Image 1 (cartoon, one colour):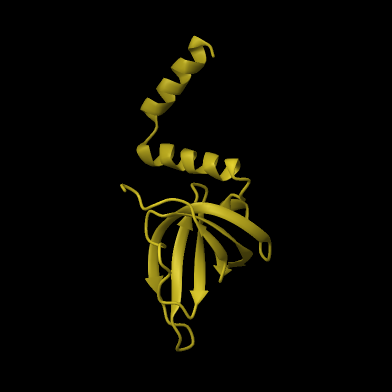
Image 2 (cartoon, rainbow, N blue to C red):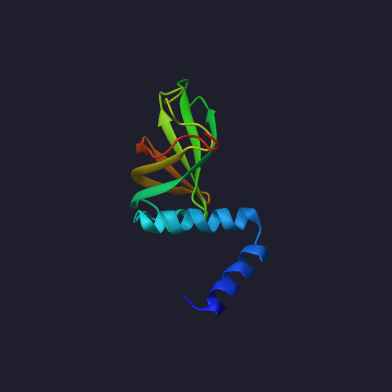
Length: 126
């Protein structure tokens, strides 16, 4: 590794916001796990995503509970929906997940219904 590339990395880190650096790190993790970047998902595509939970909400659908989770990977966001669930142990903001399922693109939003999931690490700061 030459001095120029080290200097370029230092300048990049100094000139880039923490959010952008975190986004770049998340995108490298997606590539390392051979997951699909969320921004590239197409309607009805079977995908494997990796990202961090940014928020968790419960929304009734047809009179039944539905756990909705926003997953971000640095390239975009996808909404994960588990029908008939109020909670899933371990799924909380800051948690990293790997999910698999069929994506539905609706009004610019990417949705996965009842995806298979794997908890990858503990919540941030633990």
